[in-house]
Image (tube, rainbow, N blue to C red; front, side, top):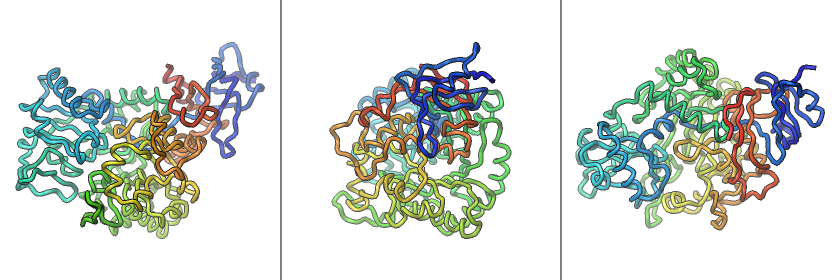
Length: 544
């Protein structure tokens, strides 16, 4: 009998198989799971076997993130990082301290500030001028759909009261028409094009910094939701290739190549060439990212009816569809025929419908090809479209951390959607009951990459530590096993890893050990769990 390299004993072991069975022991040889069961697995322990006692702990499949931006997040961690607070005065203190500590930097860049920190989500250039008046400053907010610029940055970009808004964005303005310092969506590019590009060494360091953090959270693989350059974010593709070739990429990564919304079908031939070029080892680029709309907080998410104003009256603005819906159907049909997966950013109910229409056009033209197209974010989904996900095989890629009452939701979103649409937000339960496949991700650095925190919100529809707050649309809560499956089997399915995401014999030994069994603890305590060990292919990549 062949002895195992690694054996976990005295479970629980959650297999995440279709029956959601539990075991107490699991054995690994090389990079594969060779036995799952109970006491009989201990017979595989030999002199060289590493034995991990799971008493009081839980073994799960490694978490996977279906929508994340690790390289830019890792780079930002080394820049002016504002993600640790929501206080406007604290932001200014951090920005001043960073500028003082980096007198040689021509531009002050970074981000992570929250919309809720400013009235209407709109910081001003004068605030930045008060701490950095002499150098240009450009700081992305947490969702990266907007950026905060100081006067010097706006001057260098030549943005004045006479500068028109770009087609895919908006320059926020002061009463006289001068730029206020807030740039929405595509307007960011008016300034970001001037920011010195990060170097290949910066991007590789950012990737490795991010990978270390993600492994510490139990994440063994992910889908990078933007391979390409956009709004000042430099293409991370070379960093991935470098790490894949030199062996420093320990995670399994699928890359979603950026669909340039300023171009059309002529870019498809380039995507085909890049799919071949950008695949090596644990990194492959088989997906195409199409951002169909913006976000609700700045009124650029595409809605089927207009946003409301502060008085509750309908405006003339229903958001932006970045790709013409008719053209989108043609593009997706052709991409599907070439066996690309399409990864949609679809946040408003009109964008969701346009993306589903495009998938339907592809299915009608090409048949079901199993390309696992998925729609990320799904903040507002019209009830008429819920059942279309299962019918079309479109996967619901959810970001659970956003589905809770918090200032950005309660102050900047619900009042401008109105009660009917507000009740259509993040309909995880409805999608599940309608037969949709759920995958899960974080959109880090937009929000925390910690899957345990996401599982907590998916189950409780409350933020961690907010047990006294109202439950956000309680009928949309998921049970713990379903939430875990979305972060394991569901995301592995989206990422094309059919031999990961569940603990079955023959599957990859991508594993995570938690310090407790989250299925026997009260649901409101899920967020207290911590990752003790993470393995990729049977190799320990994190121990804490």
